Length: 121
Image (cartoon, rainbow, N blue to C red; front, side, top):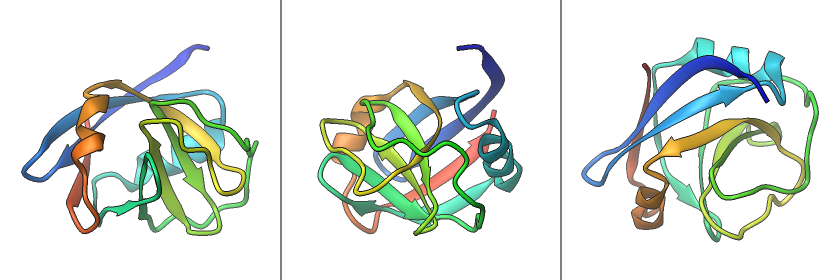
């Protein structure tokens, strides 16, 4: 898949940072998400997934019921941004926006309530 060449940084306060890149699996949703940056949120945990509320209300574009480690996805019922770092699968269909390209391991250290900051690169 070609990239939008739109990258962003995910900082977990006190734990480190990761670099992510958007892709074309759900281009309309990816673009709407990118326009929201910068964002700051409080982490929640579901298995091997970090997620947090984001102020994006949009319909599903191309929902998928599975995820791979590194997938960054929009879950419309939240609405939330989900970062999959292990074997956990979505509770329902998600719209994949991109992938973590560097630093995926920091998400294993995230705990509920940790501050997460997303900035454009």
